[in-house]
Image (cartoon, rainbow, N blue to C red):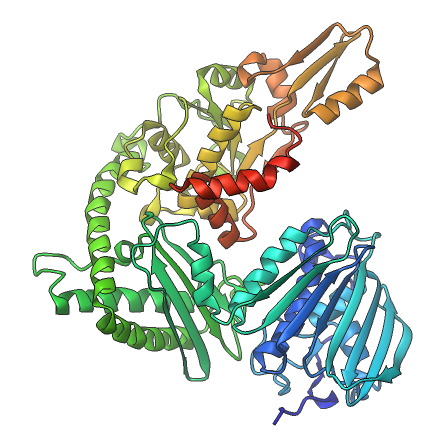
Length: 634
């Protein structure tokens, strides 16, 4: 029997104000990221119905005019008159911020967001929004424009279904761009379907040139998610561990499997929210797996008396894991909901996961042996890496560990004002050193292509001089010695040639930073410089073009006759210091691209495909994207 869900469960915390004036406070930005965030807000409300057990299908459609509709077969938003406001509960949900059934009113046990926050914000930032509620045999419809009611809730038909249909068009007065990217929505909806076992999410693109349809439906849930993340990796045992259970009202799901790589990838979620900074549920997982596997190794004689206990880092080497919990009152640290604070979550994960892992190891002794043997190899490599890491750990001048000889450091001591350019080759390094502002800009030239860290353990990686130089220059340590508070530069800028070799070097550097300095990416420390490809000089005036399209535009503007000089830069070293400064390094005129990490699982999949041992994933990637390449050199 369905739990009571009516107008009495819709509680009001505060009115809707200032959303249109300061949209970034509610959706992060008015760029493409914010545009797509509108969809997630409405989808999350539908998924909350699924988490409550009342919905099994969600259909998301991109219409020809780039409007979005979301249909679910849940219970439908209550349509009765709200006892406090005297208007329909549908209108309350879509016009009042922090109004919904998820504040202890009994509408939901768990939810990913606060029902009503997303709906009202989407409404406020839409040129128009229509909501249809299928409930009690009738179709109820209400229409809005930029948050204002233009048609009150009206019965427009009859139905034998239940659910909610929301159709909205983002407001051109608010958003910088209005074109939805199918692949961005596909990635997010796929992840949501993995995390909500049994829920079917359909994504339909109705735009004339793009028409396509995909269905995401995973009965195996996060167990299938692990299989997906490992499709380009070589696993060391065939089974994916999976368990689920409940303790103290907290639902716990854990899945993991080891591969032959040397880095761990652990993704944690609370009520389907990606907790990128972890929290108590992740601590419970780490504690349980370390204790359980060490106990098992001793019991089975795999760990001898002379062996030290394996550290958590040893055991997790090469592991891909997902921890997903559902909790009634999640307590997140900060506004970003990226770190869970509930102390009871740690105990719930430790108990449920620890007990079922013990049982799994007893039933699968071969797997247990493989994991512990891989951990022993990791421990030996870690000892070797520690010795190598000591050479790169930044110490004070009194301790006598100098910065790399090739580093031209800056004089400013406030790290937030400093930036370091990682430059390809001595030639470009010379130009950059001549161009820089010595007070705030440091230059570190690299010799050739660095090691592909996707295929090397930490100890081997630390034998590479160029990597050691970067670690020493950054000053924040690496691996379990990493401390972001000690980083010496607010911006780490990758400046490579605008050609294929430069792109390869940049990819190797990004792989290194993603695998070992992910927090620097997450905290907005990593940037890519944008050097020009062309110089056009006419009437003693210089014009720089960063791609072929810009070159054509410049030539049309200045005319194609009378040009005294047109040069295509093959490398940064071809620019004199003055040119490099004015085009690429001057903070007043340069263009930097910030490297972000919106979806770690998708990023891991791409890095593995492009930089891993298997050739087939790279071939598939090239086949898919080669037809879309417009400028191979940049």
